Image (tube, rainbow, N blue to C red; front, side, top):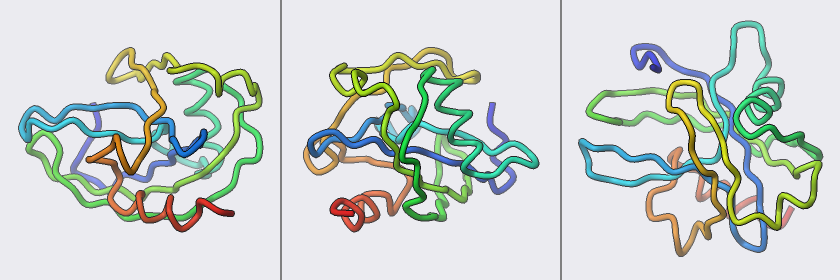
Length: 146
């Protein structure tokens, strides 16, 4: 489980497909709320955010990345499952090295502490009322045309 008593540096990766982004879904039973977040995870000691996002995408989805670039850094202070948390989020954007992955409706993933999950394509404006981390929606809009 994630230790929520410390500031957690994480790196996530945005993949775009015809106005959609690839996200995993979570559920907060305390709030009774479904939420979505791009795939990624914690930095390990001595690892750069770039190295972490490459490792996390390989570990969770078994994919290789191309055209990886940093979109921005967000500070995310939030409550999940009734507990306060604080993250520094390095937001990257990349392309899949295997272009055929864009044709799949979902990608099966595995997170060590949460188990199996599906990463799905969703339209941030129409299908993602709760998108984490805070500020990601604005960052996606500002960087959509780059």
